[in-house]
Length: 95
Image (cartoon, rainbow, N blue to C red; front, side, top):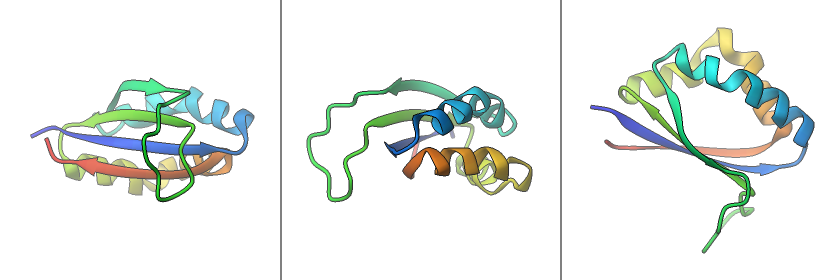
């Protein structure tokens, strides 16, 4: 069963995040993932943490694929770009 992941990012370095975005689609594809939607200026109704100023909705074939994408040691440099670009919270939602 497919799952979605919501990536909420508080951007601190737009250049680093731009470098991440250039590589993100390929990194997701390695584990069957893709981007459903992105919003560089989301409407935040409530935030217990720093309000994200960028969100992306991702899809994966299953939760194991999402975990494999996140834990893939070959993708560590790509994830490092995302983390250099801002503070992120990524939550997997059941399908």
